Length: 96
Image (cartoon, rainbow, N blue to C red):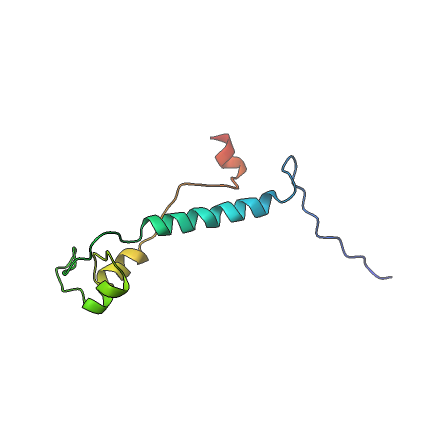
């Protein structure tokens, strides 16, 4: 006797069709907005604000408004960023 495969239907409760994709799209849009807001603006610095090393001219031309050298920017970018938004939520987070 051959077993039947169950169809991959997810129960969404009161959520409308496409709600999960909407959450994914909103999360991506927020990340893009945050990244754009964190891009340097204004005039580039000649020296890194954190370590004082000179910022190469090529970097200043490639990224207008740059304030940090590559090493300091890499260090800053490697730090975890917590947004505080839990779009999907869990039962525990909804009970708080």
